[in-house]
Image (tube, rainbow, N blue to C red; front, side, top):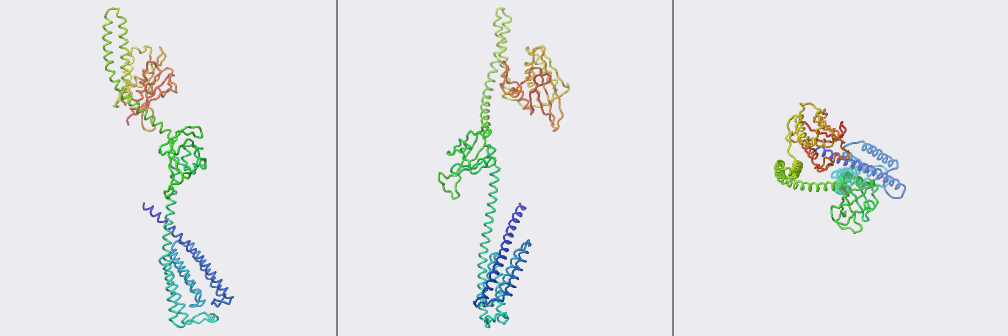
Length: 565
């Protein structure tokens, strides 16, 4: 913060020094003009009948050359002098009073018509160097004029003054009167010029600060206008676009120069600016043919005095945003809320259905046992009872899957043998009466390979994946291979890669993401929850599951699970 303040002060001081330097240069220029004009008039008066005391021409030329030379030297020093400009200004004021004294002395002393030249350094000093400049010049002018009057009393005057009938003052009171009047006027002029100089300096500082603040605000507003991600347009009363920021190009596809000067309806049709709603939207087609949902708002630009302009002269500012993604997310959120509500309701219904189905299945199994030991005439009843048992068990299994998907369990990680886990999975699968006896399932990894995960949940994942793979293998030639490895980890995070491959027809590329969605299935007897449960469980383990084509020619499901560090 201190460095910023120092930098600001340095810039302000630099600006003040530069302003003072320019004012001193103007003072030097006015000195040249003043004495050139005065010497020209003096030379003119020598050739007329006016009884005005003027020095000889050679003396005029010498005096003018002296003024020119000192002024040129002063200007060069002023341009080369980096600091101490106020001292330089005081010295120039004293030099100007000396020039005025020379001119007064050689043009008649107390009778000179050029005594008013003293006011040049006094007024210049008061305006350029307020508070002291005018007073120092007035004091110097008073003392030098007093010296001139004293020399006149002593009779020390130029010889050529006698040619004009000049009579030197011999009464000291007269000289004192001259000195008193002019000295008082000098100091009054110095005080007035100091007052004006102070007010001028205050006004200049206020104006400089205002311009600096205006530039800073203008730069700030321009940066905001250029860098804000929201599109901003301004239009006049005829709806002609007067300005557009770069963000408008990214939203509408039109460059700002293509919009400025065109009407709003020509470039962005179907935009209503009559309502007061702050959240308006319209369909907009970009130049490349892309259709987006364009959100916008508008408000009038009021004059600084706050008065309401005429209806046909209302300028407006319009903000634009591409809300296509926002609307899509809102729709997804509403859909997710609906699905969540349906899921909660369905989970409750499924839980309530499972108990009656268990009772139905148990009762049907008892009836099946009675029909099987009874009269052979009950064959039809036995078959119907077995259908009830089979379908009840299928519904119980489906409801169990649905509850697993709707209420995911907490992951409890532990180290366990992957080979032992898969051996149990294969044993459970082969106990299923529908499991094909011709199937071949091969484990291509070491028996001591361990995995960090929730064994119970991964057991369910492997059952779903293996069961899904066997269903798509060609009958009589079912082949499934399971691989596991820990590949090198360039980022330091080790992962376990488990792949399950089959020799089925594989999964088409356009459905490889859909098969993991809930209730998506291509089988008539499928529920569409097995792969969804598998992906959900893997994600709960902070892992990923993908599908592609394996070395057996069919589908290959690959699971990646991170290992603990």
